[in-house]
Image 1 (cartoon, rainbow, N blue to C red):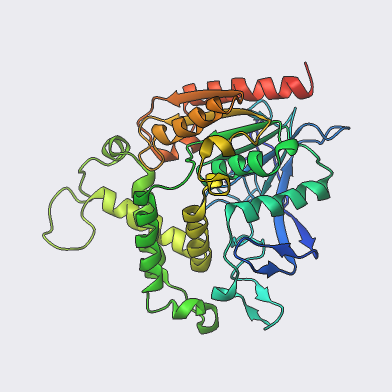
Image 2: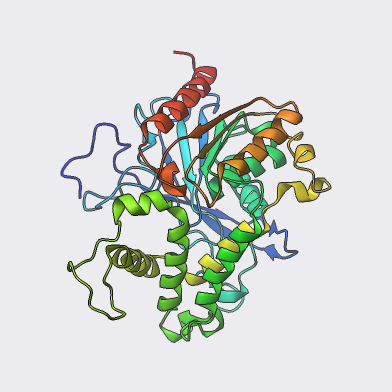
Length: 383
């Protein structure tokens, strides 16, 4: 826990809840009659509401992107590296909004919420979500906050996909889109990884067809395995070698199937922690939303046609060792934007840290990202 709040932190923050009673029509053909969105804000909205930045979270993310909920909290929000006074996304200059997506498990309406029609948790009856649905719900949050146009919509991984979707669906409401370590759609390999993770949950005896809430249990082992599979893909071979190598926990072989290598211990710990903090139905739903993402689908499967819709400027960033969303996937986005005549900057960061690099304090990354966001801030409020 922090003994004192760091000077470059947004400090103590409190989540807020927007309750929406206007039905939301979903891509799956169903309608969500009402819902809650949990969000946090950092910084101050200026007089003409032109300095707002939306942070879109990745698969296991949530609304708590920066600062602390209490002095007892051990770690700050998940993107505290980049959000705060004087940081890349400077809260002295920007009003930052971060939310938990619909279908999530950190306060926004999702499978663990009560279905008003049954009085029981939604569970598997919760409607399937897509990135487009999330963006539509986020637009309602923007309306509530009085934000007609975002200075920037920013996200990494699945968050980057949301930023891209924002630029297509609401071109007049986005000035800049920052798309980090993302892809225009998932590859067959990525869909396969997601399916292996889902099957580990679906086949867990404690899954109970998604109604485990009623059995006072949860698919612990399935979630552990799903997280282990996912986490392997978020790290590069170099990152794992530098962090663990082939180090043994006790310095010798035990010739059994218990944990012997440090990397095994790490993966099991990550899986166990994740299983206690993340809802299995939410994991299933969000991985499916990733699988479905493809903004070109509505444009005769032409990414170039889709990228002709945005009017904003773009920053696209990738990482050399990211094999989950490799640099060539980001370059697909950049090429389509360039062919569509859009204003796009691209940076490929040389790092061994893998996909998770977008969350880390990597000097070249922070410098480039910060320079771009400074440009955004200067457009809003010249210093």
